[in-house]
Length: 621
Image 1: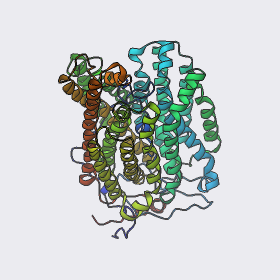
Image 2: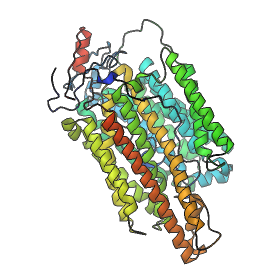
Image 3: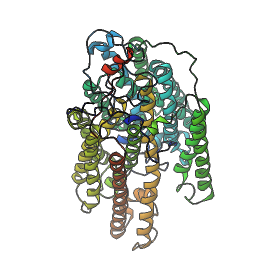
Image 4: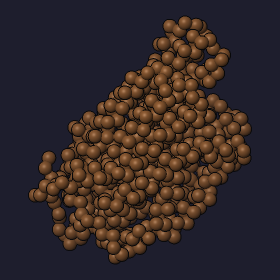
């Protein structure tokens, strides 16, 4: 048994297969707040914009496994606890053979061979990343043309529902049938949805077609991450990470601008038609240049757990409806809310039963039985929870408390997209020395302190105060998220990487959904309490209405305006305290559940498996 010798996350014997106390399957749907916040130009709270949109800069873009494309393990990889040290990445022009018989096409082991594939991944990621932000600024024009103001929030909620609940399915399909067919199907489905959205004749049709888009978006988000992990060995990971992070950062800033220009000077339907040329190029590059590694034919025909997929989708649909409509259309403790939550709980239990009996479950039990994957799932679920604070409530704070316009308020948030991809791309220099777990602990620990500092900002303060905190928060989360995603992808082989990646993204989306509902209730509760003692009568009684009232402060007295600003300030402060609590949960999950060293599977070990040798090494615990 040899130690880690200073290398990052040398495998621990059996660590990956250890059971997690109290771990259970999480089933749900990801969505933001259904009700519009009044912050920004027609944006919807939780509409999937900014860094939390299924992930943000550096979010959900963590590629990297410790093997070149196709050099992963077979179906039993990691399940028996086998783990090895970080091996040298072979980037020569010859083919690699993995433990499951997969062979890397020689062209993809060279930088020139990877370039068209990386370009396709970036374009595919751009389709999914920009979709939420580009639509948000066109909402006024869409509602003015099609009507349906009372249900327009489902333009975002329906899309995110479809993305979230299909992530596990696409992850399993990519492990079973390969990445390429799943990615092609995702791009085609997304483009079909885009064409249908552009042709929508009323709001109901547009919402339905947005769900079709989301069905394709789920394949794009999960499969792009998985292919990126297949393409690059551990030591070359920052190269692809920097590129994919830049896609998210650019989308967060450019999406609202492009959407506003198209809606204002052309027609809102062009925000969907613009996807067609981008998707067509991505599709051609994938078909032409992405070559799947050769794998041995399975002894039996692969079976797809359609019953489990349907159960996950139904559970997520009910839970999403409860989270989006609760507190908006009906009270949280009303019969509709309680009925939906109860039904979703029953369906979740049924889903667990179905998955346990399935031969090839969509969400296999090992994603919760292995300590490494379970801890990362919980930590990134907490990340989705805390990201609601800056992405949903900071724009309202900037406009309602600081008195900034939509563009300036967007800049306060967007500075986070500048520091996140930078630290994410540089994080390998840290985790190669101290390990994935400790790097992530440092990152989330710093994020916790930054979130706790927000309520200490002076009132009303200067715009650079929250902007500085967001810059620091982005830097901290770059050191938190990427090491976890890269680390967990590196603990499994090719045949399990799609499912593992989808599990992580799924939990993060569920966390975002829960955070949007919980923090929305917290903010409105604080406001309601403050407004009970308001010095004047006739003031609005919820966050959205207050934000809209403060957009025209001339209609209010000076005392009423100041009181409302202070009430919004207090509400957002409480939300950030809740986000700090989510950061503390992520920190607790890493400290108590995550193994000290992630059991990294490398090409050297997988090659040895082809000769029947099992390479085991233990690192100090």
